[in-house]
Image (cartoon, rainbow, N blue to C red; front, side, top):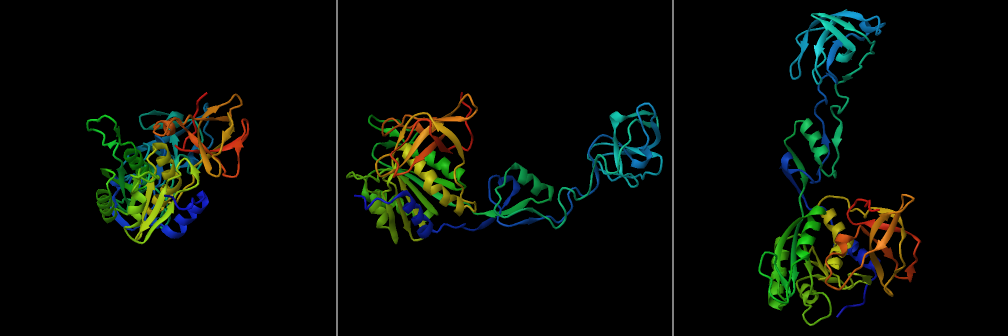
Length: 417
């Protein structure tokens, strides 16, 4: 049976005060493995980027002063000294009245201070006619203008995308220190669950939650380890949970947390060590049976078997913990303003999260249309939803046409019309 149901805010406070999540450690990995990892320390440049003055166009390196007065009908004539190629140091210098052919990315030769674009010139042998005056440093990227020596190029805590990894490569790095990935054990419970890939016996369903939750763990910065399906048997469930705690930094279970005779997870988790179960039921809809425990220093989130409830409660409660353990900043869901398309009711005394899909209205704003939740085993609710509207426990309903905040589930705004 549930203890006194905690409010949603009380449950979040327990997570903050009792679980006290923090980053786990560090490791050094290659840049090719660094995508979506989190920097452990500031990266300070030991060189200038670019390391030399370089041309940003194809054309001719010149002294800008030599082009003054050049016009379409009255070109300035210069003498071409040679060619500067990309990837090679210039072996010529430019004097007054001289020019050097140059390609994009090639170093500016000594004596030159600008580059005239090839389309503003006409050449015959070594004679170059320039039809437009240019200014000093025009079409030149100066040494160190992108990154200066001693500058902090990237800061600890940044998540490494393709852009950041490009910066690290530009600095000549091949390895980088990142926060250790938290290992998250994922297991499902229930006699009705069968692992995908196996024959589906009568009366059973395939394991949905392990796969959706494992993907959510990866999106949060963790490394999921799927431990399979555990039947509703005390000895087997206890052994599976002990193995999970021994091999992982955080444990996620789904199913077995309600009040039926086979809902064994809370009592077994509570017997595995201090502090035991901290939250046993939350006054929310969906997700009421959610159980949260701390065994030693390892959090255990036992989520409902209902796929929508499990994934929503993961996003609301477990995701921020995994983010912090991975070295990330715990982030709130992005929100957009919308008008309620229909009246949205709260469950009496419980904070209610109404799944909605967004549609654009004629004024280019958004309308939030509730998604039919279906029966207890419905698996498509979150797939159909763009986000959710939160109805406080002390509010009876949100009326149609009322402005609401929609928390986005996928981080992008839908463009349905």
